[in-house]
Structures are given as C-alpha cells and as structure tokens.
Image (tube, rainbow, N blue to C red; front, side, top):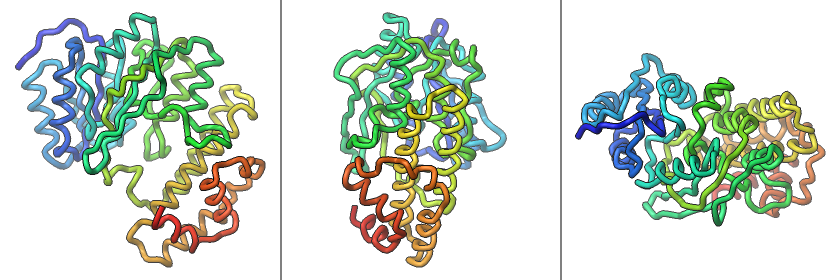
Length: 346
C-alpha cells in the first residue's frame, strides 16, 4: 500500500547484503512504524541473492522506500555513506538488515530529540539469541541528557571501554544502530563512515568523529532495537588477519585522540582495554574455529609475540577483573595451549 507523507523526519538507512531470509522481518518493522514521516533507504551492496529484487518490491509497495543498487560491493560503511547522500530527513538512523526494531522506536527517539533539542538520542536494545530468546538491556534507568563537552567526551570514552577495574567491558554500546543522528551535524562536519575493510570497527571511528562535534545527546531506557544473533556476522567468523586488523584499529584510535587534543592520560587506558577486548575475541574465534591445532597455535604465537604489547606495558593489569587478568597472563607468557583449552569451554 502506498503512503503519502510530508518531508521525512527520520531517514532510515539499511545496507542490504545476503539477507533474503531476514529482510522481510526488518522491513515490516520499519514500514509499520508509528512515526509515519520516515524514508527507508535500502542500499543493495551488490547482493548476490534475491535481495535486489526484494528491495525493488518493497519500493513498489511503499513510496517511502528508496533503493540504491551499488555496482560494486564496498562493505557496510560505504553502503551507509551511499544512503547518506540520498537522505533528506532531519535525523538519520542506521539499521542492520538482519535485525528489526520496535514499532514505536523512531516515534520515541524523534519526539525525545525534538522535545529536548538533541543532536542524538540512543535507546536500549534487546539481544535475541539463536533460540530466539530476547534479553533486554538498558544503559540508563531514565532519560539522561549530556549537554557539556566534558560529559559527552565521557560518554565517548565509556563507549570505547571501561576503566581497568570495571567488570563490564564498556558502559555504552558503540553500535550506531540504536540511535538517531542529526543530519545537519553530519553534513556540516562532513562526517562519513570508513570501510570495515580498512578498520575492523567502523562504528567507533564514526562516533569519535560525531560525538566530538555534538552539543546535546541523550539516552532513553526503552529497549527498542532487536539485535539478532547471526553466526555468519563479520564479528564472529574466523579470519586469519583479524589480529592485525585489531592492531591497525588500535593505532588509528591513538592517532585520532591525539589529533583531537585529548590528553594521553584521559584516553590511553580506554583504548588499551578496548584493544585487549578485541584481541580476546580474536583469540576465542581462533580457538573455536575448525582449523587444525597446529595452525591455531601458530596464530596465537603471532599474537603473543607481537611488538604492539610494548605499547601497553604501563597498563595496570593487576587491577583488571580476574578472567581478563588471566587472559593477559597467558598472552604475555605465550601459553597458547592453555588459551586453546580455556576458550574451548569458556
């Protein structure tokens, strides 16, 4: 059914690649939003399945749906950039096509943004496991507004990682999919996504560029986004170069914070812990992969012996939670066999 709308309040950008199984669920949750003044920009990133035809079909059904067919696969970040060029809404959202959202999500985010004159609003989210059980998470207990440069910098640092002794890896989720972003701020500062082919976490680099320019942001507790477990996700699939990609990202984060004038004592501990968390995930994927035992040990030895650890020599490892402290002990002492055995069961 076609919809007649005024100028869109929110442009929802959805990169699409090999998700024909999930795309209808995602689009149903977007097309049925209680906020009707939206546009949905589907970016077909040269998907090799039925997704390109499915995108065109949704555009035929609903004139709020626009479709971009890319001629070359460029990855998630560049697909989002393509959508940004077409977006006309006051705010922009970035949704992953294998997830879905609550029908009131953009109504609540937009009304909060307008009521409190905000550049960005984030909501809570739900993790949906492989048995379809829903686990809700709220990062705040009530509407929480940050309107000073110091407070917003604090949010950014808490997205990157917690301090050494904290049990949680980070206070706020770094993913862009649970918020809306000012289109004007994005345009004024020419903020775009990098490619995940260059940096393994394009969302955190985007947030560094964006939040250091934002004046007022907020969180609401409502868990409105449904993040669905997908064992083919780039964050879960084995790749031999994952550790080196982590190193490249670590160096880039240090560079960016230095360039932005952050004092080293303010950001370095956070970036260090961020890096260690990513390396733990890389090691876990290696240990649980189907590659032969000898290859696992070889890859882990390369991680343990890399010179990058010299940059973390001053980190207060003794303050870390026990399981993280144990991981770093095994890394620093090259205990690859123990790493494999532990990550098989943890």
